[in-house]
View 1 (cartoon, rainbow, N blue to C red):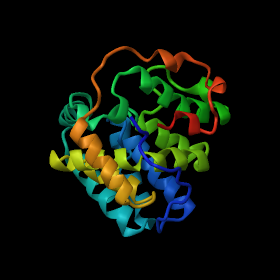
View 2: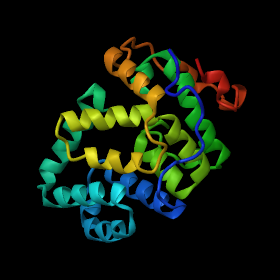
View 3: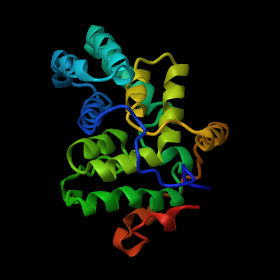
Length: 230
């Protein structure tokens, strides 16, 4: 199976400044993680922070924050679990869409792990999440390495758009967060649309054979990422 894009993209093509990009990524990293009381307490501050953003990011973020703030805490939590933990097509793990729980996914995960190692933060990451967890990637891009983080996100534009469409189909208020993230990245092109259609038609592979290659040393593989492309 091919990787998610035909070529590596490095430019954003968005109207946001680098600071605005980082702000969107920092906010969405927080809001796409499991909702806590601490997150709810930040809604007012986050709404204020979004005021400087262009409409493409500001409007969906503002709408999400309003709806999130109006939702009962118990309902917030159950909504999150129902949305992201119980539906295969709404996973927050970026490589899951192409590889499911197969051995090939382990190799794809090494690309993320290598980026974290290069930035010197691999040892600081939680063992409770795989390295392609979207809030983790967004936090990395926002606060650690904007160039490498943006590259990882841009390479997964088809997955991000597929996730946005899935959330939209379910009338989820989380749709707005994906719209905001996509506003910071290159627009969906014709190759992306073909890949999205393929991923949507096939669904994640369900051959459950573990992630053994993920245990390999990423320094032992092609660090350009070209070797992982199929």
